[in-house]
Image (cartoon, helix red, strand yellow):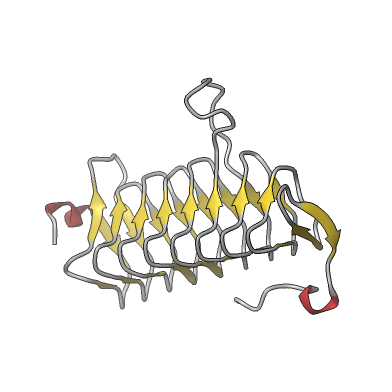
Length: 196
């Protein structure tokens, strides 16, 4: 374990693989991890990160500074959370998800493998500031979907696999296509996710 691990406050029952780095960097605030966390090999969790109970990572996960994560959150292999982000409880981020700075993810949210969230409307062309997406409670994001900067995915909405979301998606609706269009949520997709 790296020297930075001394900057970690962790609850009972935590398992941090010897090949993981927790408390990376020099920050005023330590990394705080709740009880019963599992951080697997190759993962890096920066300082100034607060994580609740029952957190689990796959391998090679990155969690940058200024991130707050609730209870019972899974972060899949090779997922990147680029910091200054808030993630609620009972959230599942699958393999290869990219979460940029200034993103908000609510409770009971599922984000499928390869989904990409973005926060820069005109990359390297202008300096208008960063604004990540907001994913409200109970929403599901399908595999390989792309969410553009500043969009809001409403409560219990469902974004289909491969969709490119350029505008807000209302609660309890389905987003399909490129660019995504809003449709009525089919009966099998109605209601909340079963993550809690």
